[in-house]
Amino acid sequence: DGGITQSPKYLFRKEGQNVTLSCEQNLNHDAMYWYRQDPGQGLRLIYYSQIVNDFQKGDIAEGYSVSREKKESFPLTVTSAQKNPTAFYLCASSWRLGAFFGQGTRLTVV
Amino acid sequence: QKEVEQNSGPLSVPEGAIASLNCTYSDRGSQSFFWYRQYSGKSPELIMFIYSNGDKEDGRFTAQLNKASQYVSLLIRDSQPSDSATYLCAVFHGSSNTGKLIFGQGTTLQVKP
Image (cartoon, rainbow over all chains, first blue to last red; front, side, top):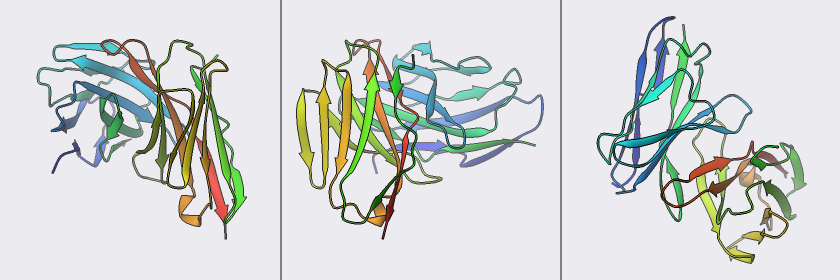
């Protein structure tokens, strides 16, 4: 099936840990995005990438890092520098007709 | 000024009525506009996109774009309780090679039976 796969669905992080969220797409889209959503809020852009080996910071990039070594993959690392990482993380890939989302990863700090 | 603004609501309409959702954007050069529906706890799903001024209809949904006023709206006719969700407006800012997709905060729609 064509689509976007995010894993894991739920993730628990201890204080001071780095964690990596996976995002894979087989839609052959060039653009990929990471968003963060807090309860009752809209989507805030963390990082985005229009082509392989290139990415740009979004509005809330501090405490996060990404890589884009393959067209299909755009992993997001939540570093220990991100002081309030508990949120719903959404990955999307995009073509001119719109962006399509994975199922999301819920990250909780324990 | 936020790049994409929506009234957070909630917007409450009776079943069978027309729901009207509005969105304004700041970048006059924006070319592509999208509406997403998001049910609680789920990821957003694309329901409409529009590029040209005027109306675009798809079933019970109509998207309206006015670039001069930097305004995009979504009309839902014959609203059903299953339409109760948060509706997110998204705008593509910048060129196709370097641009980004920015979302509003979303409007919560409640359709009452």
